[in-house]
Length: 256
Ligand SMILES: [Mg+2]
Image 1 (cartoon, rainbow, N blue to C red):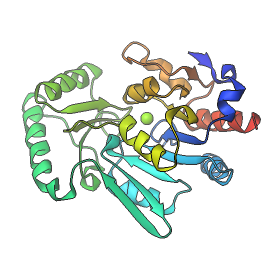
Image 2 (cartoon, protein in one colour; image 1 turned 90 degrees about the horizontal axis):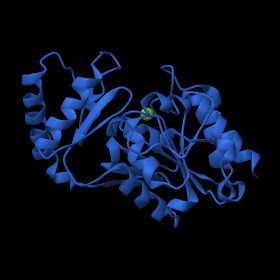
Image 3 (spheres, helix red, strand yellow; image 1 turned 60 degrees about the vertical axis):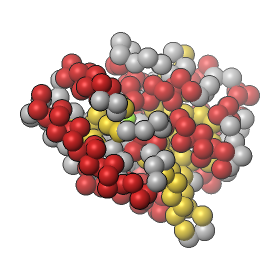
Image 4 (cartoon, rainbow, N blue to C red; image 1 turned 135 degrees about the horizontal axis):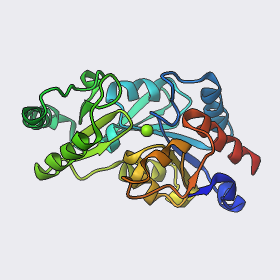
């Protein structure tokens, strides 16, 4: 991984969209820093599309799309994107909306199976606001060993489900979708491709995005996961969490 200051200035000048992870990247230390929010607002005002990409639930994404200075939000690891057009929230989902209740039953029986092996697991506290996935809490309000988390990934795989570990949750879902597919769909809405975008994240669940986007950046804490992450970001910031996010935004502005 190279320092972000090694990015080619002409590549950065071509950037018309920034896709950014929330937990551990835009939000760190439990709160959104006013400085980070302010940088996001400035980015958007400068004409760069701002697209949040997260494993967080539909309910939260609804608010983000409605009120934050973002053009769109990809949520629940790519199950949908929401964007605001005039005063309306446009909702694009991978699975048809009328399949939701049947789909949720399938997820619940998979969680029952996992709980039989590991009975102390708890669902994330934001589970009630989720539509298309189950989130097991590993480090937000509980503490689950990484070996158990990796074993849960294997169980999910054997049940035909997909799963990803973030810095706080294991997200589990069914369906051939992912964050990079849904992100590309959003970019297309704006007539952009992946080489006109930059992605910034912090942990193993960002690995496919790091592999997918030619300009991929990790905040410094990504180095903790070097052993277990398949695609490392090409560039890394000096600072952690939202300070790393701000460092990248400052670098983008410095090339203008
Ligand atoms: Mg994260």
